[in-house]
Length: 543
Image (cartoon, rainbow, N blue to C red; front, side, top):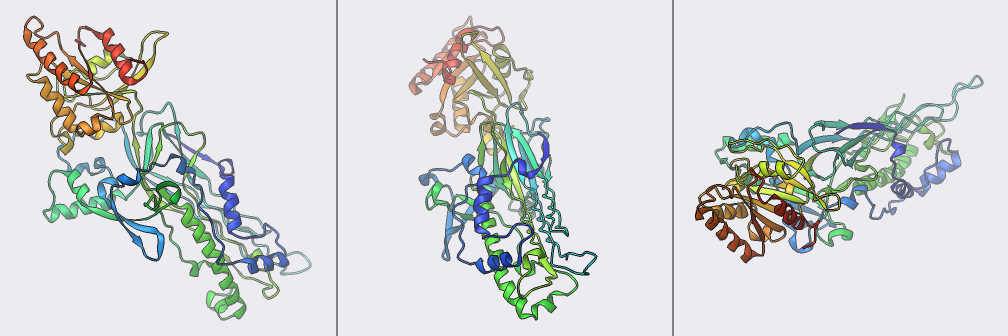
């Protein structure tokens, strides 16, 4: 992961800027004349509307089908597009950030596949109160420039990265500069670009501190059990969401992110205070018109400051950066308030605030096949025999503490495919026993799953059923191609015991339409035939 600072104009979304500029009405550019200011102020209207804004990340948004929306929600009677979604806390955090409450978890190595990151976009710079001066006159027309727009937070998926370990805990874009005299606009705040591995899923989440405080409250009240997952799934949080008819019809599709906003205090005064101006009829009339402008800015922010409820999936490298949080708009300088009634405007507008949000970055490795097995089934040994991966190998449970990916090639003319090895799964893993099933995210995208079963164990068929149940049952398994590998077939090979165990496995696999093969990874027996079957299971080789 790297952090790159670049000028905003290099990654500016021109189509969005064009649509927003129409919404702000015909705001004069620098050096506006008195007539242009009058025309602009008179054109402000509460009827200005902005349509469905195309946000950068909508191309990568994840949406369930209308029939499978998982949560309950209530509509707002005053706004048909607005609703409150009752979301379980398990969707808004990750158990790795609650490890202090989970005594069953093992400490992990430097491999990091989940990060919760605080992102802050920059505040818009304040407008300037200034008047032109030269040798012939002490005070001339207003020439205070506009504040610069605040920096935004961008994300980009790149190939070649394989971990989230180098991500920072906090990313803060810089604020826009204040406007200057001489009708000079303030500098734009510098953007932050976060680079992540291809395969990263990004979701909006709650501040970890809030979740931990809730957990502590439950612990102190005696409501806590050892199953963090159950607690998080039974505690709910109300999310303010909107539906966008382009994606999910009438169902909630986007979370509404909010900036701190108070348009009544958006003025910046110089020399004379606010009360002085509030007593003047000409300012009262100007303030009414500018409230329409503020309302327009707020509406555009609400439209832009939405994030897909089910997150965005960067499963492929992104050609251009995606804006997560947009910086605040710069405030207007006093050059915009010169009118027939207002000759010396000693006021300007404050810049708009930025956004302060938390996001959960979840890396899901992209491999054609996923290796699944109980501890000590021989997955790591198998992976070293068939690929370029070098996982840790040992004679103790949970030898594999982190996922690893190997690449397999069937010769120069043959297909090439990748295989992901994840930590062993035990009975009760779905209830956070052993290493849990948190690493299953790395084989979710795989076309096929390879179950590695040890014939050394007393009941290999029971081992296979344990894995099936822990992975979610037949409904989940049937979505994948399946290959069952009976490893350690060399043990007791002179007796019929090992053969009988395999035949029971094969009979079960045949009933499910799954392929199977006996091997010895340690002695490289049957490996060539296994590679062909794996290539077919991955979809890289036709059957």
